[in-house]
Length: 138
Image (cartoon, rainbow, N blue to C red; front, side, top):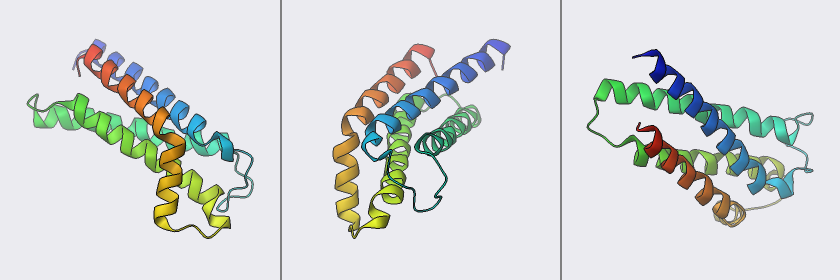
């Protein structure tokens, strides 16, 4: 891989991190003042920044997998799909940690609540990831 390719991966990883933070922050912002059941001293922003870092790391792994598997598969569609699932899972974790842990939610209630709070931001950030992947020609 050339140095330019590494720069492209690093820049895109930062963009993915920012989009994951954006989507999770605004999706779950209404619960930002609620106390986390797993960490009483953890702030809302800390939870978001840490969980979004994992998505960025997974992107790097996907790029490495593409190099191993060859150029026969479309990383734009695949990573967009993985991105939306992981950000939704981040949102779900924040919701279950800050809201449903203190109440009696069923799994379907949790999923519906998270989806209704985050679908707009998930769509926007996933479309941006897809467009950027196409522009960067991954």
